[in-house]
Length: 264
Image (cartoon, rainbow, N blue to C red; front, side, top):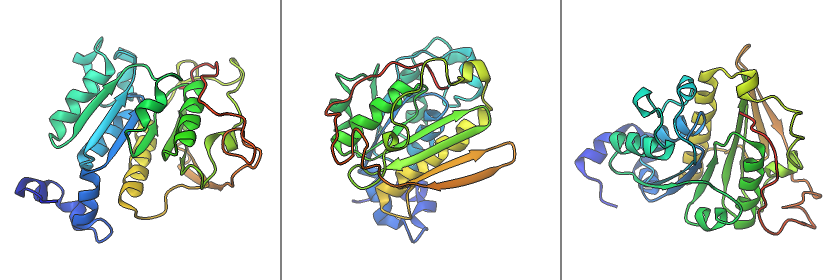
């Protein structure tokens, strides 16, 4: 593709990287990423993907901005309180980079998720509840759309990148959502705002790596960290042959929303 002078300057630091260069930047500009959840994880992911020049970003979220969100959901600001998160996020992205096309969606559920994700090259799970995380996993695995899972609580975070058909998926590790009251949530246990930025930025990096075919994404690896002692750990995984969605004899043939409570 032909780059304008403004684009050459805007993306110059990417273009200088041998691993990306002009060809990699062109790939980003012609790629698309859907971010489900415009909150703590989705905020930094969306901002960095927009800054990177990903050509089309989808944003899915049914919530409105609340004052308590602003401690970690950095794409929103005080005047946005009461505004739909997708509208607030879209405005910030267009202000940051007019190269980026933005599509917005409300609630993602079992009836519409596959029809939405099929139009994207990569999905980022920035949701705050286990039911949505399993729904996204199953829909992406069944539709063969690569995605990044992420989760945070208190001072800790975890993430894995899934390449359907090739690597372990979220359900290979955690078979089903936990019982309703067995896991604390951010609203009850708290969360350090900056760890949302740490993890969301990692998820954006995983998307860029996949789209430009560079480096080694977190395939078959669960990355966990604890910000209190800044300890990072990478846990090697393998596909579970008994996995109910990607195993040898799968029993899940369509995405279903399993009941759960919020995880963050």
